[in-house]
Image (cartoon, rainbow, N blue to C red; front, side, top):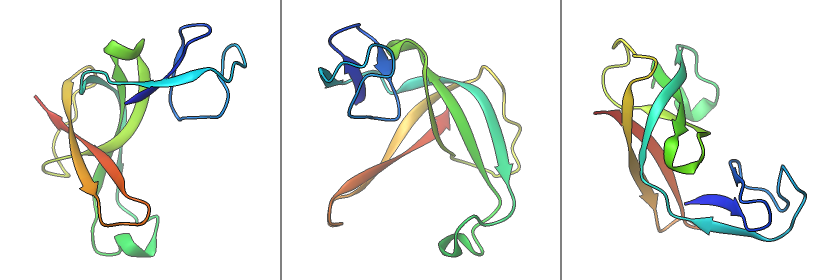
Length: 113
């Protein structure tokens, strides 16, 4: 689900109370295909939070979503943390749901296809 402005028809991520383009409060959530293209990446070797101690390296990718006017989202790239990361490579979303959390939430990861 990606935020969409009904006023100017602009997709945006991260979600906000107001449209980044036209300042409208008339936003909506729309489902888009969970496919994207790698725009950039960072191989992370140092934990950025104590919960990540001992869990590196990992790859954070910036993914463009063609179905949402190329809005960009960040997520982890699944697989070998030392793998080659192809800029322009196609990825699909893999969701990690945390339904028992308060409030419940989901994380998005990306897998090369």
